[in-house]
Amino acid sequence: MRTHYIDEPYLEFGRGQELCPRRGITEHDVYDTRLMARRDKILVGAVGTSEALAKLDRWIERCATPIPARLSEKPKLFPAFCGFNSNLGFKSQLILYEETTRPLNNSDIQEIKDIPNWNQRVEAAVELYCQQVEFLARYRVVDVIVCIIPDELFDLIAKGEVPPVEETIDGNQLDDLYEHNCRRALKARTMHLGRPLQLLRELSLDANAPEQQDEATKAWNFCTALYYKANKTVPWKLVTNINRPAVCFAGIGFYRSRDKKALHTSLAQVFDELGNGLILRGGQVDLSKDDRVPHLSAEQAYTLLKRALDEYELALNNSPGRLVLHKSSNYNRDEMDGFQQATKEMRVRTVDYVTILDTNLRLLRDGVYPPYRGTHIELDRSTHLLYTRGSVKYYETYPGKYVPQPLEVRLVETDESADVICAEILGLTKMNWNTTQFDRKYPITIECARKVGQIMKYVDPATEPQVSYSYYM
Image (tube, rainbow, N blue to C red; front, side, top):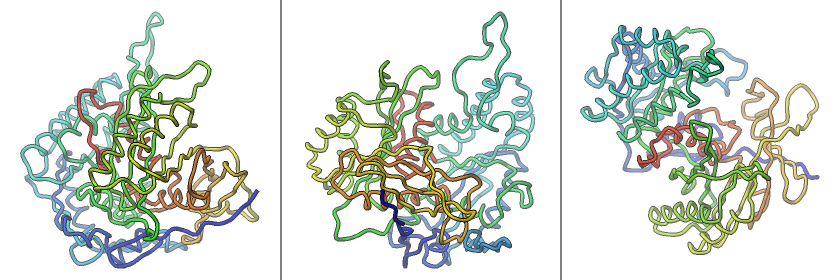
């Protein structure tokens, strides 16, 4: 067994490199300021009650100026917000006009609240918001649409996102078995309109609301998410080695249908370290009675990966020099045959097949803090543990609430070394633009594939899903 520490990967910004997205944007501006095709004005649409829309207007105005850091013994974990304006940092503006808002009537909200059945209540709320989102997407010029859920409605349609157990009559359940999730359904139902959504709880717009993040942290996460969703270009990217071939990262996940009866697959592909990528919906997969782990057939594996590599070649006019395929379950022989046929046809010479799993194993460290993020334990040549969450040297603390769990990394068939593969996984945990705290547990390949599956189960089979991650985050 070998244990060593992987240094925190650096990120590239507009004018330099930093470990932390917040410091990087503040000191060096967002990465895509190097590009010509970016928006320096982001037009925001919004749906909510009149009171909630007024709060959003004040919040956007507040975000335009610097917001002081909270008082903390760990200033790097809770830094000040640089302000969302044209002068520094994001080098852009958030603009909300009255004509790009759609107010909801309090009477409509009350009607939804009065519906006793969870599923019907969620469906009614989704329909109400969909109508207003569609109007903004079709008849107003907006880049991203914010949907604000009133506090009194949130607990009834979204809190926990799990419907309560319904009573039964004569052994027959009153409720249907379909999953009803407000956030997922709303994103899926409006996807075809071509405007990403940002869902907000009204409570989060209140400055001194209990159990909320500090203002600066909320501003960082809110503004970064809107910036990425509106631009579809990245505020930061991984630092790359120009002496190595271009890498394509892809993650494969599985998700159950809303009725829990069928299992499907989804693929999240990152073309390159810029974060440019592709979302694909795979077909239904079968579970063997002898092996309850989901697997693709050889044909499904070939078709899914071939489509992804075709899109890569179309986007970059070249096949990737190297493909790294992350999967959330073990590979079987049929899958390997299908994947290898696709890579051979697309002339991808260097391929790494990697399984990334949760594990119950833990590493103990002297003192009260858990192992450092970046701790890599080689159990044997093909089996590794990697702490992507843990004590963070940059933050000078452990920023989590619970005992961190390492990832189990299994190298199935690889051309690259274990050290490089694990370092890449650590770097890919920093490529989620839905948050600016960089110690995520899963690499974006796996996290994105899972989030895609959650939304994809609500997308009609006849509807072509959006290919950008901005519609799923």
